[in-house]
Image 1 (spheres, rainbow, N blue to C red):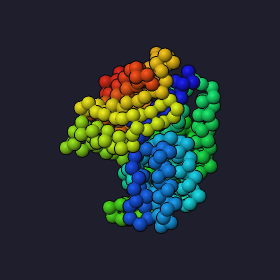
Image 2: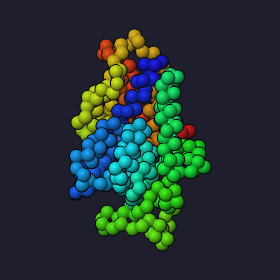
Image 3: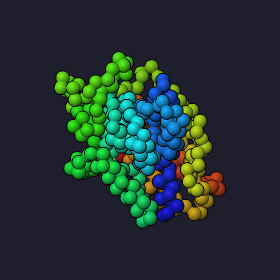
Image 4: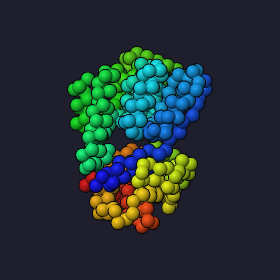
Length: 321
């Protein structure tokens, strides 16, 4: 079970939903992080800031990532007085980055959401579960330290996923300013909300109808493969990503011989985890609603095929029934 638990935990760290990210410099003052928060992405962000003292702003568009990586970047933001500006999305672990800054900005259409981390992985090993429980407790403690009251945190925790309007963000003191990039305009958010209803959620962005799902998946595979193969831990490697028309396929190697793997336990655990996570991610749901899908293929160290798990719109719809 320990080997399977380690595998399940680290599969998440290089699964479809967290290997896509990009870090770049924009202008003289901005570091831009687009994509998922993990050890590699946050290290790249920090190196950029440390190498140029003129860089003072983090512009972020992220659907979340891993809370231990978010802790490290959050500490850096707080210590170095980095401004955080949300361009489009700041969900789940990203919200911690926003909370840790004294100078915070959202656009009129920014999407914010809280997601409590207990739902992200199935662990049966007592030692690993204790470590995760410790991380989860620190996650809530940090939000509390940055000013989110206990009642609100309990509501967030009970709901699991909570969309946050910019009006809510103002009330919770998560955000101070409204940023309109195209107009190059900054407005005090409290002043902005005196004249605008800030308690409506922004409309969800739509996939460009001129780009096919197969093209989107092909681009995703090309982007991910730039960073592969990626050794995740002593037992798990994401070797490469491929496509089969509208299906994005992730090829994993488990560095354990097939004789050492409880195959049924592995299949059941990964199937439950991947369906739960994939069917709750808005960006993946949008692709699946357009006919796309995601497949996860696993092979043992001794070259024996273990299983393939596919998630698509039908799977998610049947799961919700």
